[in-house]
Image 1 (tube, helix red, strand yellow):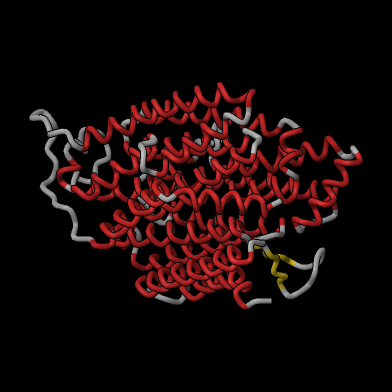
Image 2 (image 1 turned 90 degrees about the horizontal axis):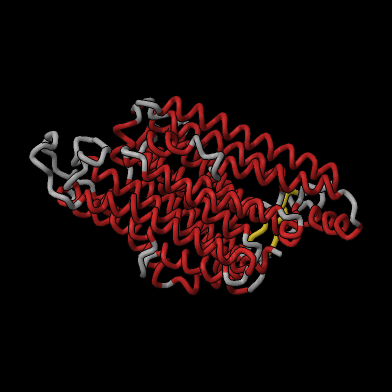
Length: 499
């Protein structure tokens, strides 16, 4: 075994160990350790990706060198490597961009706890990406939930406590359903490792036995992870959660957490239950319907919001609907589009939340449309960042959102029965996206009126961290928009390895 093949295991352990060490450090040292840890684990994930691209194959790493079905396995391939690298980059930029505000919003004696949650969050995300064991996946789903709840409530301002409670209640409901599904699957197949479980499922399907239990497993696991990822109508925890956390926490929660659950769901569909079984059982159609409804309803909620934080949060409901719509198309191209949109939404939504911080700074820390009038002039870089993110969400050419919508439209052509509704909903959703995002962009570059309430005379903070994060997020968005073909090809190859 090559030494590089240990990197996924090292990444997860390093992230967890950093959280343990940070518990005895002060806030500044915990912050520095987290940044170093994120950089190191991202480099290790890049090494794993390079190795898998070189071999053209995925591989399994046995924890403790115990073989299946007793051992705990990690499995790495091209898609896992790309996703892990991408998650690491987004996490690093989100932490960098919110450094000053994190120090202000979190009590000094609790600052190290914030970075402990960041460490545990990254560890759980990497585990969800790499694990080949279902029970290990459940354990890290719970770690992810606890870390996410901690990131929300640690601010202890405004509605952050109630948002954390709502997040915990909905997350535990989703986790409970997920655990019930795993329990039934284990009872039916006798396996928790993904590969042996899939062999048992294929045998049961061929025999025509346990049809109802298998359908229940698909439904319960699908609903459980849909709740945790915020699919409409299980989205009611999202607006407060994303809107009242610290800037870093909002960027991480909106950009990464829900995507980790969706990635796990895709793995289970491919490696355990069989994607063809999902399609033949009509479960794909159910996800498709919820997805297209979420695309429209999330945007309608966003249009009616006057608080820009909640507007941006509701737009996530619509974008998660895009992902589930792609999964529900039941085609390989639909899944490629869904995975690419995971990357698109992660980068773009983090850019929006981080850029919004700079706009709020020069608007008396107010978030309503009237107070933000002219904020694009008062903080030009933040205005440009928010504009780029908004145009990406609308689907402007050269940006990542355009490629996502192009992939969805192209994949719809391969599904004759779903082609027309998909194209119609894409057009409707894009129009609605333009209504609320471009309305805010226009507001940012509109001169203040004499009747507008005065705002404190403020200037943008001299925060090179925030400026660097905005510039890098814009760069990531442009890379996804202008150099998408290698990424799409890597996703395609990675999904082929999934099977």
